[in-house]
Length: 266
Image (cartoon, rainbow, N blue to C red; front, side, top):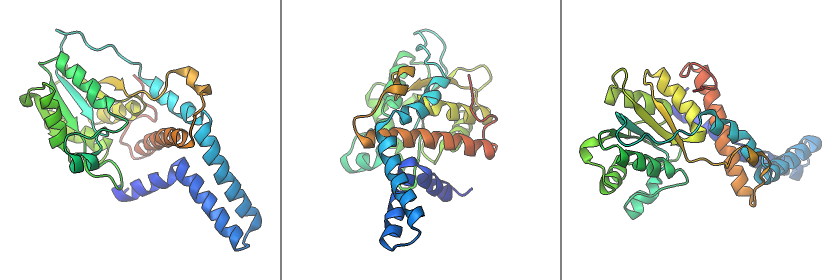
């Protein structure tokens, strides 16, 4: 499927998009006196999804299995072997970086902060940043600001491998493997958001790159969050959109044969 088309379909499939489109379509039909029953169903259904999806624990319920799939692992002890650390992009607000200088970060900032912590503890390891333009309207993540941040934080530039051609996690895996050419038996840690780890691990495995999952950026406290509501509708909708997008990605990549199982496991 063409990249742009996949992004458009993904955007339209997000619960918040579905809710708004249904609400607007219902109101438009009601205003013109057309299909009164359907228009009411669309309007009320869209409104219900906005409110329930935004305030109920639904977003937590949907994202929790993703975050629980790969257990958090303790950081490798200093002196233990670490050949490389891979930081998946998605943490930079490239638009802000370009306009303000430095490295602008978004809600996935733990991918770089925890990756940096790991890299500083293992000065022998290569540090790979693999990013790019991850959304339909996104500005491509720039390897320059990321590399400069890591170097300023104490990472020897000679350790850095920067890749910013990739547009999605599939290309992250393929391009990273091509660049670093991991040898059998090497220990490479993959740092990404916990909810994203199943898809990322599946793609790296399929690319022939056996990585050690290092999940960060948890969005839930734990299983008890299945009853935790949200204080503001945008918070809940954002959580729900992120989770649904991830499940759609797993399904799509399995259908396309880019992962070997729908829900990769440890």
